[in-house]
Amino acid sequence: MVDKREKLMNSFNQYGFLTFKQVIDENLHYKTLLKMVTEGKIDAAEKGLYRLPDIYLDEWFVLQYRFPKGIFSLETALWLHGLSLTVPFEPVMTFPFGSNTRLMKDAGIKPIVARNYHEIGVIKLERQAGQFISVYDMERTLVECLRTIYHVDIQVIAPAFQVYFKKGAVNYAKLYHYAQLFKVTKKLQSYVEVLS
Image: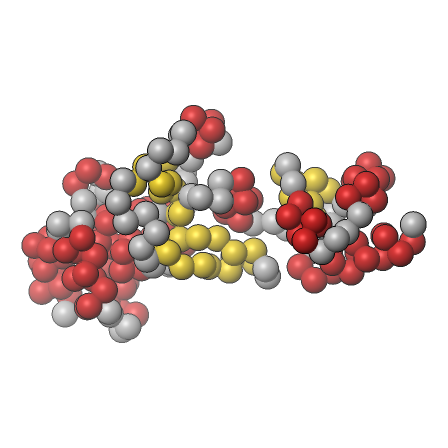
């Protein structure tokens, strides 16, 4: 029994948390894990997500774990990239076409279902050690916010573009590529002309 506990604790010591998938992949003893949860030595943060009691799990990581097909987008992605100071009250995530959005809405997420281009421009951000989330890159996020269908406030978009251009690593090729995909080239051009 000590060997099983020791093996589990060694896995926990890497980042302070384990997923059910990791338990299976690393051939760890699941019943020992459940016993440690009952004893209070490990907390079950979410179904299939376990952590040491003194480890903080980022709320965005927990949402990502719960909805792995979702990608943080629009105002939420602006904030995650540091392009906006406004902390999202309702996280926005984009899901592939055909996703049932009821569970996401129940979890307080504003879901967007994308027919096209769902996987384009996805990057991984590390929020805490080992806690990665999927988010659209800065260029896609900025351009997608220009689409009228999403009703992103101009008072959020304009400062985000200013911050992006002040960072100095402007990727014009990516910006214009996304602008063509989402048919907002003229809107993007007006921002580029003013800020360049």
